[in-house]
Structures are given as structure tokens and as C-alpha cells.
Length: 115
Image (cartoon, rainbow, N blue to C red; front, side, top):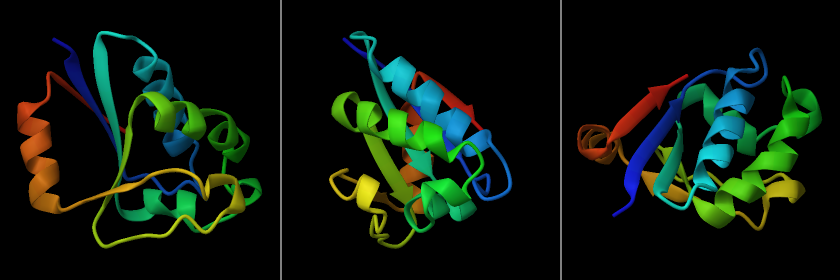
């Protein structure tokens, strides 16, 4: 049975590299066949899908690692529906997660990592 890992970030990617680092770590963990990884972008971190990667701190990493994560893990958007307007991320499947669902996932995950 796979162990569940939840990576949560609220950092503003326009001001901090923490969101790009969370994406990088989640993508790396998601390639491990014994882990089920979900990245949850919350609050300002949702700017990843509303701002050009060139305008984000370490945005180049998003181009590299979001597709890897989308293939082997889950990308969740906490809050209302958000469209991936960046042409680089149009093909990514995003899951909308409510605050209540996020709390349930935190309590049921084997590990939760916050950025």
C-alpha cells in the first residue's frame, strides 16, 4: 500500500522561491513508486497558474517539475476553481479542493509538508 504525502504551499511565487521548491520536492517524491503525492496550492501560491513563469521566483523550475508531478502525482488547487492560463501548463489536470477537504487530507495523510 502506498504511503500518502501531502505537500502544501501558500507562499507567493512572485516574491518567494518556496512555491517552486515545494513543486520540485513534490515532483521528486511523486516518482517514488511507494508514495502517493499530492501538491496543494493555496492562497497566493495559486499565482503559479495566473502569472507567467518568467515573472515568478524560480519559475523556470515550474516548467520542469509541474509536468512530472502531473504524471505521477496530483496537483490540487485549494479554494474556488482556477484555470491554468499559462500556455505551458494548459495540459495539466488540476483538482479543486475545498478547505474542509484539505483538512481531511491532512489528517489522513501519512506525512504533510508545509511551505
